[in-house]
Length: 412
View 1 (spheres, helix red, strand yellow):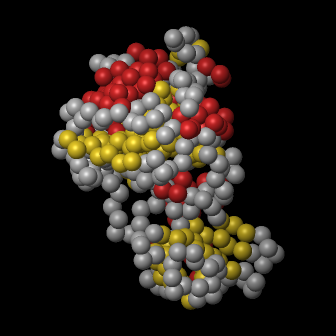
View 2: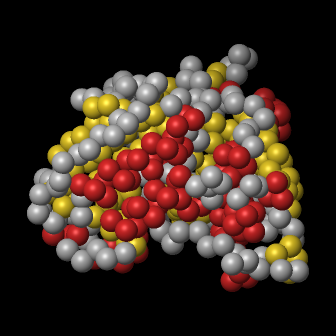
View 3: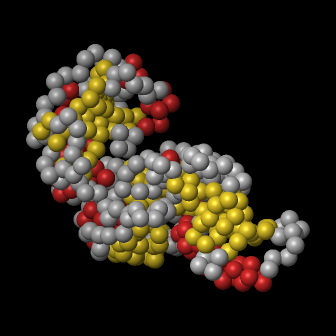
């Protein structure tokens, strides 16, 4: 069925609205010093949970070989099996939102077994299809842990058929989650692409009225990566997206003739919100949707990425704010910067410090304004320092109480 672009005709994204509080993304999409962002998944891998009404059947491995744990990179089809019967079961609300098929009794399943698998990147679709068939044979219901879907046996077999199709429509194997913030902007993130050897996609700062078009855009970029490949596989990838070239007709129709250039920045994303895994954030998309059934729709208004806002803030800090500091801030005014502090486990916590000294080598020194939660040995009021190139944002408080800066907060 063809869809009309615009309004209610947009291909809908999955209705999983995960709210988060302001500040929850304080470490999102920032590479820490010395940690190079990954260039993409090294293989394809996924996880399926089998919920069994009584006892799960025998696991028929097929093309998979059994391993106690999956290797860091798979050179063949491998699978590990673990009993998870002691874990929680999905409640009625979860099944209603993400269930497909006949799921009566799933919440009271007697046994739960998790199948984790990995395969070479070019065999991801084949491995997914076979893992789904194995699950449908041994389990009563199946949880697709990569997308969050709950399936009965028929649903698992239908998904296996989709993964085996000559021309795959990736949107049938993945979902797009919407994460809402208090600012009214949203993060959109795909789930399920990594099991096909592709990075999951993220778009940050999406206005509420652009969520559906952005979801369609993410699906189209994913389809282009699957069918056409990215122009360059590295920390930054620039690729052409042309829905008219898609082999799968349904994917082309849903993309509404989208054509343009996507700039992707590879990162691990924010684990607290999006979980672990390699991702590519959509930094820019220059292009437009075309027409569906003759109804034209203008391209979504361009949305600045968090990285762009942060870069502009730091440029102003280097120039205008530094000049004001050098000239001497008026009495009653103060400058604060947001800087990274690392825990022994390698986690980064972003904290504000009040600048007391600005050294010639662009080292900012001052007192910590907040108490760390994950960096032992540091306390509020301690004297600390930070390099200017690692600062994330700044606030300039005027004598009358007005403040400037902190432009990145609306994204967080």
